[in-house]
Amino acid sequence: MTMGLFRAAPPVISMPSRSPSLHWRYVERHSGGNMIRQMAAWIARNYWRFSPMNLYEKFERHRFDSRHGVDTQIDVHLADLNIDSPNKRHGNRYHATPPVSFRRVLKKLKVNLADYTFIDFGSGKGRTLLMASDFPFKRIIGVEFGEQLHRHAVANIQRYKARHDTHIQSLNVDATQFPLPDGPLILYFFNPFDEIVLRQVLANIRQAASASKRKIFILYLYLQNEELFQESGAFSLVFRWHRFDAFECRLA
Image 1 (cartoon, helix red, strand yellow):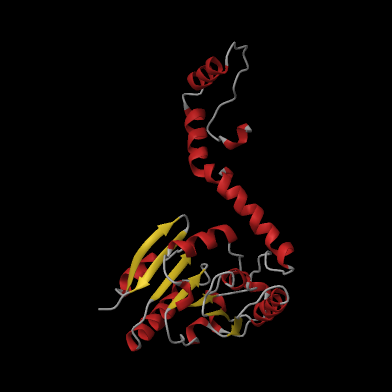
Image 2: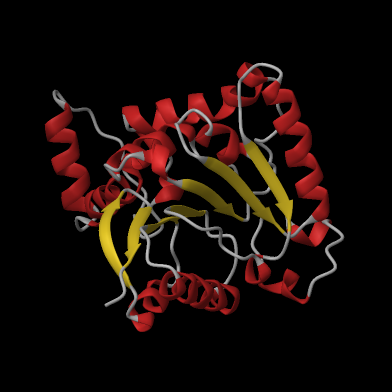
């Protein structure tokens, strides 16, 4: 590691040492302990980046497109798209869901997926829809308000269908205007929009659950506004795993 990582550390005077431990004790003593503490803090913040699971995740993420003949990996910023919606300013960029974590988090729900419709809010290029088709969902629906992203998803679905038996549908619709279908649901969010839109979508989910009692689960990757789930009083945390939060809509 370079010394640039440790802003407060003074220059280290080189000295001969018979063992690494003696050298590090010398460094710590002459740097006031700052260097060792900063190194420990850096490792604590970043160790997960070099874990076997994360390295495998990166490998699977980058080879997904080549394996399936699709184009889903590259990020897309909404500022680069023509989106005729007042909610454009509340949306976040498209970022592809990590495959390994997605498969694991679905299995952690421990429900019969064949009973459920899977819906991805902010489905972008459609990677999550394609991955969901590896599971026995009743239906798979993508909700995407960007027409260019929606068309991209449709093209990916067609390419994927040439190799797989799928039942995927991408809809070009604003998340706040999407009517939830009947039956049990698993709703997926990869931090697609800010609290303004999320509040309205959660209200729609609660209203749909009140009108028709059924199981509704929410899987949220990189949740930024947990207080919205708490405020509504309709959602209970089922589990938290890595960067995923899983909720169930429960109404008295």
